[in-house]
Length: 95
Image 1 (tube, rainbow, N blue to C red):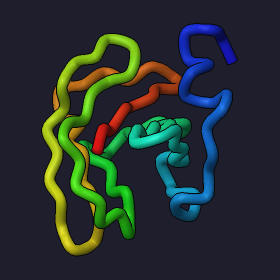
Image 2: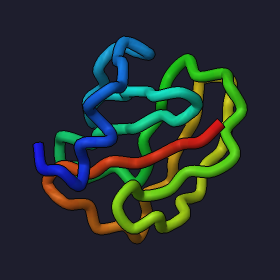
Image 3: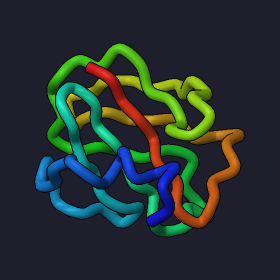
Image 4: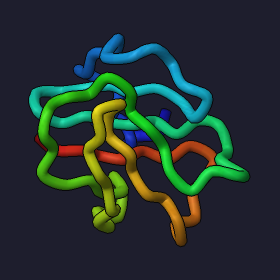
């Protein structure tokens, strides 16, 4: 893991939800990090299941580019349409 993404790993905890087909979720304080590990070739959104906490914003970790999201009874859906993802990308969600 390179230093620029270390904040999303070191000092965080996992287990907020089961690993998904797109990757995993970690948290530190009130910030969640979605680690998109697998290439999303057909999906334009990810679902963070069983997340009922209200979030204020969702951004790409490195660039801080805002992402659209909506909260549903199934969890939080983050819209990735128009976003080019690197091999491994991190999103930050703030509640």
